[in-house]
Image: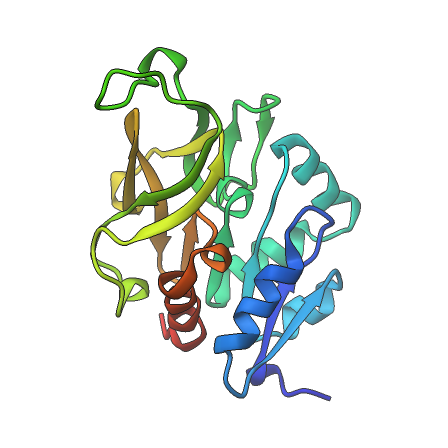
Amino acid sequence: MTAAGKTIAVIDYGMGNLRSVSKALEHVAGDKQVIVTADPAVVAAAERVVFPGQGAMPDCMRELDARGLRAAVLQAAKDKPFLGICIGQQMLFAHSDEGNVPGLGIFPGEVKRFPEDKMLGADGLRLKVPHMGWNEVEQKPHAMWAGIADGARFYFVHSYCVQPADPALTTGVCEYGIPFTCAVGRDNIFAVQFHPEKSARDGLQLLKNFVEWRP
């Protein structure tokens, strides 16, 4: 059996791009084993936890509960190094306008759709929603940015973004028509709207930082 101190659990609730996330983690995990799992006991035994997600928020919340994983996620977010990715970031907040559903409520704040009337680029042309492709991230001080230049570009695919009630939660900001929070952090939790597993060298560096992070 793998020692708990050597495992990184990637939570499988049926809504994540699990293969690319797990393969990217394996690339930087060193002697730690990456386990894709839907078993709450495996999540509880892991040293650190990754919470990815793709799709619509109502579907993600429903599937998380259908697989009996809510309690495991809430507990992991209390006491382990915890990385949320994409919808896995949005689900940490209290409420989402996408389907008008409650999230996990770990962080105070809302998930809102990009406002159509603000979707204009610097050239005055209309920006498409979803926000899709590479964009620069302005960092706020956090250990998870080690080795990554401020303004580095990451890969995004989303129509909604988080609006934290506490500005101190924001650890990264991106501009797409409006400035929006694209990374949040508090204590043992770090979560990003972009996809580090699709973000080349800087994305792998972020995942490596997570593997080594001692919050």
